[in-house]
Length: 84
Image 1 (spheres, one colour):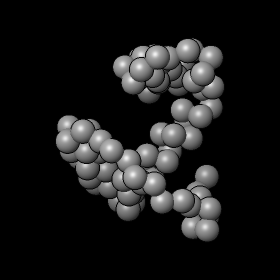
Image 2 (cartoon, one colour):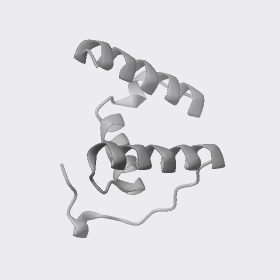
Image 3 (spheres, one colour):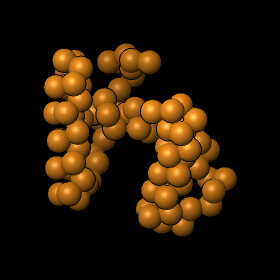
Image 4 (tube, one colour):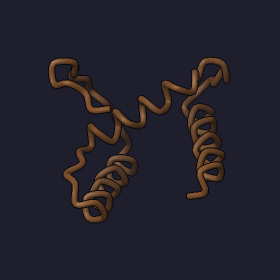
């Protein structure tokens, strides 16, 4: 589901150097694999839309590590269900 340009709001996102480097590398790999021009913003928006579907508050995460654990477990379960 592509966002309309009018619907976009600019925000500042603070990442560690490690995550920023990973994001750049992942985008490069995705571009090479698909030939599509995928942006960092598109990857972040897609991840946030996926996370929104989880209703994260019901897991009562207390910090970033707990949030990551919920997201990782969900991705792993979904990957097995989809047989990736």
